[in-house]
Structures are given as structure tokens and as C-alpha cells.
Amino acid sequence: MLAFHPDFIRKYPLGAKIGRLKFFSYDVREALHISDIERNVVENILENIENEYRQNIDAHTQDIIVSQLDVLLNYSERFYTRQFQTRSSVEPDIVTRVHLLLQRHIDERRKGFISVNTLASELNMSPHYLSDLLRSQTGMNTQQHIHAFPIEQAKSLLATTQLSVSEIAYRLGFEYPQHFNRLFKSKTGITPLEYRNKN
Image 1: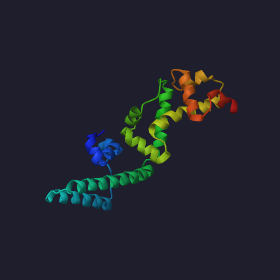
Image 2: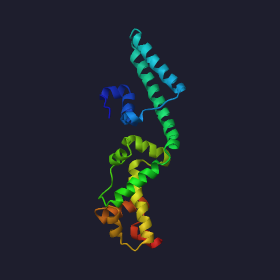
Image 3: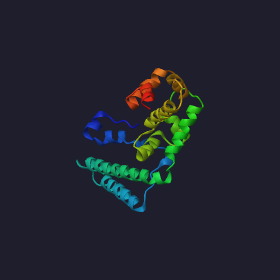
Image 4: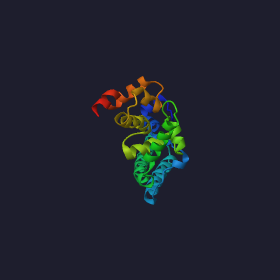
């Protein structure tokens, strides 16, 4: 993540903004694809920056260049947002692929949750890119999917089997049933037993 001196951030909030932009951590293969019209917009901004830089520097030069950079970043955010909307039609099965990997993790009896980094790596994506792609399609980021998936599995097992809550917890990869109970209640508002008794 980019870091800026506090004086720079105080004078130019753009420094803090850059630090928050996730696309700086995307992999090269997740580069922004832009249309010819969008390319012209970007090139015009870069030309404005270059022209300002080549002029005689005065008291306004730095502010004007920083303003142009802010405009460039705003357009970049817009183009990435558009790209995710477009990408959802190119990669409509991303949620299915994520769920298959989460199921495989459970089936292989691995303990604990799969990490966002591991899941992204198995999908050949950077963690931020995967989260942004999932959020654009489902409203939930990768971590939320990782937590929601075993809860949905648990609901099915609670409703259709006689397995105890502890057995379900172990089957879903929880090392301790108490952790499962806490997560289940935090996501549903009720305990696993209360859920079973309601259904």
C-alpha cells in the first residue's frame, strides 16, 4: 500500500485517496481495459499535466498538477467500475467458482477458513480484484463469501440431518464448535439449535 508523509496528506487529501484506491494493488494481468474514447480522456489529462509541468513553475503549478491527478484517478475509478460491470457478463460464473473452491476446502476436511489470498491465488486473481469483482456481482466481498458459505451449508445440514451441532461444526472445518456457534449466531441472529428447532 502506498504511504505518504502526513504533511502531504494534510495539504493534499489526494495522497490519502491514493492510499485507499484498491486498483493500485491489482496484478498486471488485471490492468484496466479502456475504449478509444476513454483512452482519449486519459491522454488529454496526461497532456494537461505535461503542459503544466513544462511551463514556468509558479505558485499554482503544484496545485494544478495535483488537481489533474485527482481528475485522472476519478476517471480511473469510473472506468474500473464500468469494467467490473462488463466483466460480470464475461465471467458470470465467478460466484460458482468461488463456491466450488470453498466446498472443496470443506470436503478436504481442512481446518479453519481458507484465506482470501489463497482463494484469490487459486482463481489466478489478486485479492482486491477478486473482492471487487464479487462485490460488483453480489454485494459481498471475498471475506463475506468465505464466512457465509459454511453458514449456508450448516443451515442445510441442520434442517436435513440428525448430526449434532458439534458434528456439523467439525464437518465444516471448525476446530471448535464454540467458534461455529458464535459465527452462526452473528450471521443469523440465532444459535444453530434455535435454527434447527424453528425448521
